[in-house]
Image (cartoon, rainbow, N blue to C red; front, side):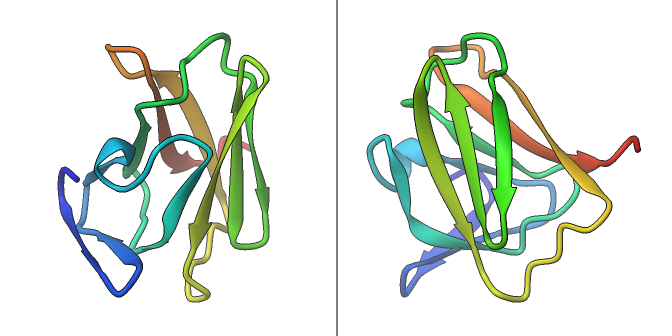
Length: 106
């Protein structure tokens, strides 16, 4: 993980950090709950190949990221508030997908 800690099944992102999924679990589900995610933070889904930015779908405390028919799911702590935000997907420069929290344009 770039900037953060993992303890008791909770991965905490420290301001402006990047979480590298390969340090947490294989593809499919992160396997930990994310805390401290803020504008500009990125989850690097190393096992989810970027295809065409299929989409990121929030549902409560879950975020499902789909690329090329494969979906990874991120889970966030109950104190997380994503009001006024959106998610951008981009290639990570290798074979994975970067998922970044940004200010909503709408």
